[in-house]
Structure formats: structure tokens, C-alpha cells
Amino acid sequence: MVGVQDKKRSSFGGLLFLLACLCFHLPAAAAPPFYVFDVGTGGGMALPSLAEEPRMARELGFDGEGTALWLGDELTTNLAVLREAAMPPFLLLTTINVNPAKGPPYDPRLPLAIQRLAGQPATVCVMINGLPPGDTNGLAAGIKALRDLGDLAAKAGVRISIYHHVQTWTETLPFTTQVVRLANHPQVGFNFNVCHWNRVQPGQDFRPLLRANVSSLFGVTICGSDTNAQKWSNGLIQPLDKGNFDNRGFLSFLDEIGYRGPIGLMCYAIPGDPRDHLTRSMNTWRHWHTPP
Image (cartoon, rainbow, N blue to C red; front, side, top):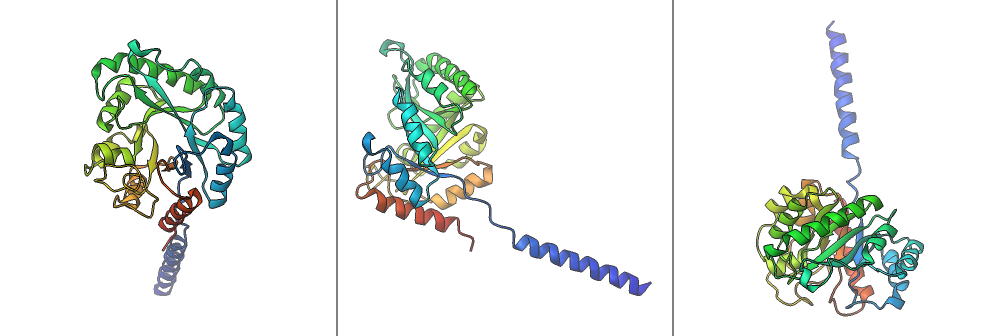
């Protein structure tokens, strides 16, 4: 009997060793999709260059595009350009208005544009204008507009995300998340933008807010950024290999709280050759996601 027990122990130990080896060799978790948020590269690329920029970004290893949402017939044409370049649109930016005295809540072409996005992996991000930051007089109009757009987005299979931006109604992230909760629509969420966080709430801890609202965190844009900077170029927005904001720690935190969406590289107001700063940022991204 002693020999039998020894064999069992030996077999069990061998099984544990095999499992340990298998676990050790499991591949690292895949990096999230990483896209160019082209508002723009080098200060904004002209529309005639649209076909050029996605091809360059794809060549450098990016997975898709973020750009302004085209509201006219050019949307269909430009989506075809992105499709040909194998660069799907992950983020498309537009605006809405919460002050009836300043006009309608959104461009009348927006509903059709959202309808045309069916089948795309896009999130329609909205900058909300019309009233000063946090002005509660805009809640009724803002919530109605977001719910209406959320219904349209649901039919198209896309989502609506509030883009917190300096000097807009939803300038601060706490107010933005409050608006999302009041809208109470499954297709309506919010973005986290590193550069705007550092401009509006520098040095504050974003983690409790994001952890509490991760289910409605629909988009993230990052960049190299100095946390106490005031200027955009060479301050709040830089290539990923510069700035003192801990982007690598931020990405680890997103993984910890379960955010699995795409990550955008903010390219606005970065001077110089777009290929240079996109290459530098991609090299940094790959370094962060290369197993030791």
C-alpha cells in the first residue's frame, strides 16, 4: 500500500508541475485596440489627406481612427476610405446644445449620420455646449437630447458618450457622470480624457470616480501629459514618451476595474511630423504591452 500511495503522490505532484508550467507559459492579456484620435495629427490633417493618414497609422500599427463625425453625404465616402485602409472608426466627435435660446439641441443631420454608422464599432462622443460648466439650467434639455440620441444609437448598434472638455457644459468629470446617471440610458456613457482631466482637475485622484462609474465608461483617450501644465502643445498633450502623467499606471488601473474598450491617442496640437510622434507613441505603447 505504501508503494501505491507514493505513486499517487508522485502522479499528483507531476500534474501540479505540469499545470504550473502551462500557467507560466500562458500568453499575456492582449492589449486593447489602440487608435489615432485625429483632431488632428500635427494640428489637424485636411480632409483631402484623409486617405493618407489612416494608411500611415495602419502601417505604424494602430488599430483604428477617431475623428470628427461627418454629418453630410461625405460620411459614407469617408467610412469607405477607412474600411479600405482597415482602420475602423472607434470614436466620432460631434456637439449638442443644452440652451434652447441658442438653437436646436443638435444638427438636424445627426440622426441620419448615426443611422449610417450601423455595423461600425463607433462611439459617438458629444461635446455639450450652450451654458457655463455645470449650469443645472441645462439638465432638462441635456437629458432629453441624450436620451433621444441614445434611442437612435441603440437602433444603429452604437453608443453615445459625453466628452468632458474644457469650457463646455460638462467640463468636469464629476458633473459629467452625474448627467450620465440622470440620463439613465444604457447607450449613454462618458469618456475619460487625460489632457482635459489634467487641465481641469490636475493632481486629483480620478480612481474612485472611474471605479464607481466604470459600467458607463465608454471611451478613453490618453497622451503624454504634464499634470500641472496650462498650455496644450508641449504641455497637456505630448507623445506618449513624454510628460509626467503615469499613463502606464493608468492603463493598469483600467484593466483592474474591468475597462476593456479601445484606447485613443490624443494627437491635437502636437507639432512636427505626424509620422515621428505617432511612431514614438506606438513604440512606447508596444513597450508597455511587451511581456518581461
